[in-house]
Image (cartoon, rainbow over all chains, first blue to last red; front, side, top):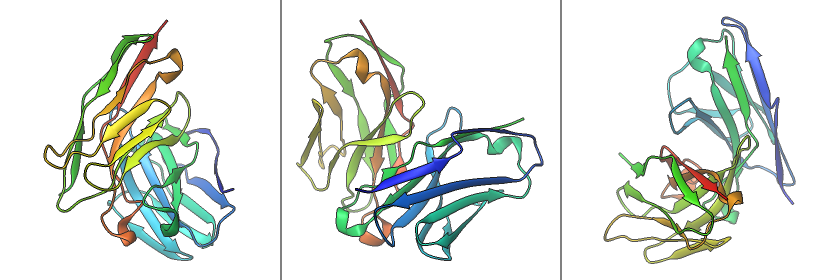
Amino acid sequence: SQTIHQWPATLVQPVGSPLSLECTVEGTSNPNLYWYRQAAGRGLQLLFYSVGIGQISSEVPQNLSASRPQDRQFILSSKKLLLSDSGFYLCAWKKVRLGPEAFFGQGTRLTVV
Amino acid sequence: GNSVTQMEGPVTLSEEAFLTINCTYTATGYPSLFWYVQYPGEGLQLLLKATKADDKGSNKGFEATYRKETTSFHLEKGSVQVSDSAVYFCALGGMTTDSWGKFQFGAGTQVVVTP
């Protein structure tokens, strides 16, 4: 069966520090991968998605970037965090042959102080 | 553009009460519709889905029917339990296979069930 792992689960970082969040999918190959963010008091917003190694599409302009160095690895990064980057970050994957739904990880709660 | 509107919470219920969470959407074409649930401290789990008009999704006693005429996908459960306490998200999915996974989510509705 397929599983998705995100780490760390929680993170407290000072303003101006770098960020690296990692997401790994097991049990499938060539999935589509997604990063969503849930900011406080707001809904979920799609940040990035990837259909293959090295292929990244950004949905909204922001202080963050994403990379996909391996087929089942998706990384969310920032060179300098802002207070407004605080939120709950969720990674998700899907395969077209499995239907229109996506499967989400456990999330990373990031607090920028 | 596409959007999803769901009722604001929190919704507080007693155990065994009937739950309804309203969700309406705006979209061109006929998207797939979903309900995801987020239990405290966890990520999102797919609760149910419907991929075409008049489809009824169901899971764990929850049901939702895709109503094209009212552009709605209301979530219902006849008898809630304390373990149903969570945040529920209505979501609209992309309309082509290329855009599947790119969801438009509602703001989420927190449900609190008391013993």
